[in-house]
Length: 86
Image (cartoon, rainbow, N blue to C red; front, side, top):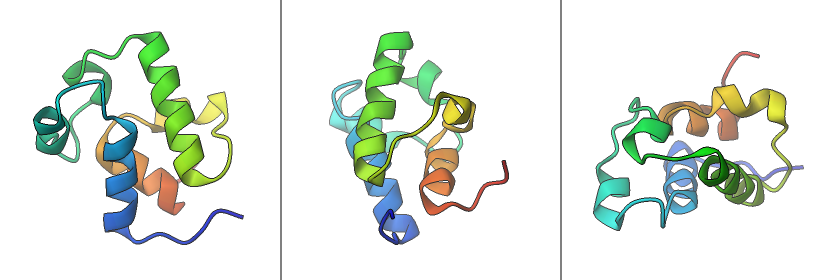
């Protein structure tokens, strides 16, 4: 069972999973609702790498059906916290 996170902890895990796809300053400057793929120019392989990292941070696999829910910092945080609708 994944651990319980605060919103700040989940935000930090999302931003940590994004490291290397942009500079630390670019990742830190991302707004909560900015589309990640466009902002960091993530191609399909980059996105899959991000999902793998996020899965590790979450403590369980993220299924492909859930990928569309991982569009922004906010949606990823909500996903990690389990606060989004399916």
